[in-house]
Amino acid sequence: MIPKQNLLALLVFASISAVSFSQTSTHKTDVNKDIDVVRVYEQVVVEGYGTPFIYKKLATAYYFKNEYGKALAWFQKLFAEEKNTDPELAHQYNQTLKAVAAANSTASLKTSFLK
Image (cartoon, rainbow, N blue to C red; front, side, top):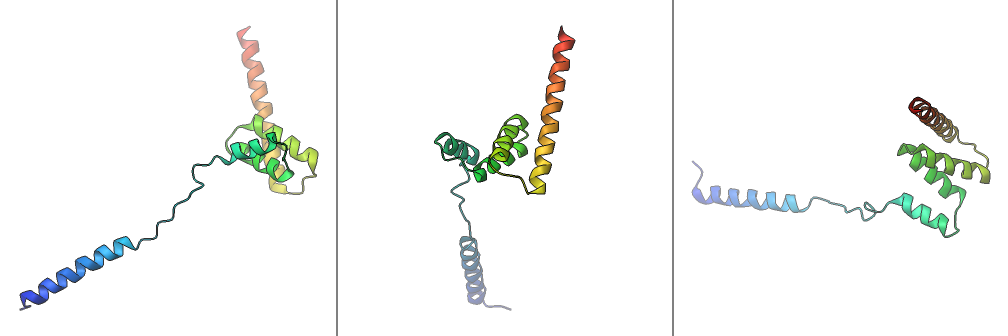
């Protein structure tokens, strides 16, 4: 049989180890989590510091937010500044054009239906 002192020592050791292990968990805080990058980039453009890099970031951000009208505007601004060599970006631009055309045709159908 295990003496009571050894059992008590084992219990204290286990509890201290558990507390120590739970406190050593690495928890990283992301300080940029609450920053809306799109708003920051748009502010940079408003202040006159727009670059093709920023236009690309804005266009792809709006593309993935399914805001195709805004994405199209930024794609057009980007392609006015530089020639596109990225096939993925070309695909996103084409999909944006299709989405805007579909939205426009749907809107015109609704308008003609309501007349």
